[in-house]
Figure 1 (tube, rainbow, N blue to C red):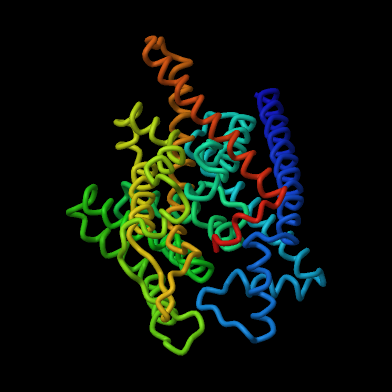
Figure 2: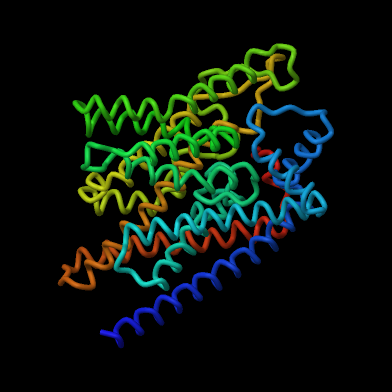
Length: 402
């Protein structure tokens, strides 16, 4: 017994050391990448400029939590604006990776630390499959489950995956005497996410509503609790929306119009192909493991959220009051968060599939399906590396995506 306990303790220490080393290196690599962009032409540099204007009192933002945080960190650290940007965003990206690691370890408790870290690395790297003869950019027109050039997307992603996981876990608990402590925590995190950027909530709200109607249609108590959780974030979003769209005298005032694919077509020669190369791996999981996807509450709701974001990006366009279209494609934000959720939980489902294949005799057809899915995931991962390379050489093609 003592020997087993000693071995378990040694294994835990080894796992902890491995994880600490991994995230230390991850943070360092993020610093190298973000520092390059903080001094370049990406949206990260643009957002640093916004924070400076906020500090000078020349700019006001209804969802300025990230910018105020950057200002505060710069004030207490004594670093330059660019260095503060580098450290803060790298910390948030590392926090996002740790959250993904935590979720994988919860969903796959029998997996070793090395496997979980490998899955986390893949989840933090994947991008739309790069096809150079279709489009010169990995991100342009496609979007990506990982966005490295946009400060606020990185900031909101740091808590979005955690909020999503906690909310689904809360709603799916069999115990009807649900504790209010996690509900309050979820509501607080949702409010924080809206203060950073409302991109999570604009896709999570319709996804959760559909999930409750389909899976819990007669559980009115759960409806009531879910409504109370999202009430404050919804009110805050309404305030943000009204401040941007009703203040005619504001420099940033805008109007929203319903126009099919108007914005999306500005950035891709073919929307359908862009969708396919962005979602190739999750689509393979959906097709080959359809029953499992439907039964997996996390993955099924993630698909609802992603589709809500896709619909918003497809139908909505922003215009200035003078009639000029706003080309920053702000409505892509929810789609990007939805892509993150779909990829994270699709990777978890793929890991389960591989584990089952190792312990059971599989037919040749199943083996072919696994190979196809593996190749697609490898292509997404390779493309993620190319996307990072694209940013490192500063092609100046992404500043428009704000």
